[in-house]
Image 1 (tube, helix red, strand yellow):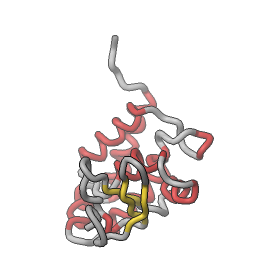
Image 2: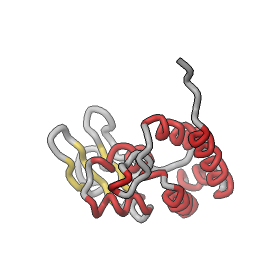
Image 3: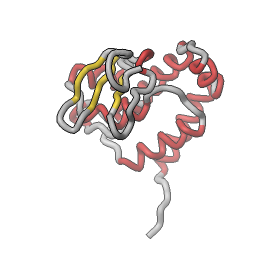
Image 4: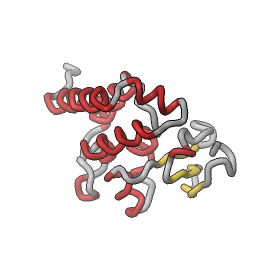
Length: 153
C-alpha cells in the first residue's frame, strides 16, 4: 500500500503556504502573541474563503466533504507556519457539534470558535479572541464566557 498525497491535497498544502506567507508568515504568530490579533484575523478570513473550516463538513451542510487526511494536510501546514488561533476547535472539533447558525459563521470565517474539554484540553485556547467559546463535556456542549469557569481563561 502506498501512502501518497493526492494532487488535490498537494494543491491544498501549496495554497495554504501561499496564503500564510502572503499574509505575513511568522509575523502573524509574533503579533498574535503580543496581543495584536489583526493580522491573524485577516488570515482567518482568507483561510475561510479557501474553505478550511468546512474541509470535513459534508457538502450538504455547506462544507467541502473532505477526509481526515485532507484535514491532516491542512494542519501540518498551519503548524509549519505557526499559524495562531483555535483552528483545531473551529475546523475539526466544533463543526459536528454546533447548531447551524454557529456553523455558518465558522464556515464563512465570521465566527472564531474555541472550546475547553476537561481532561483533554482543559483550557480554551484564544477564548478572549474568539467570538464563540464552549465547554465540552461527555454529555453537553455549553456556551461559555472567557474567564468565567473552568478552562476558559
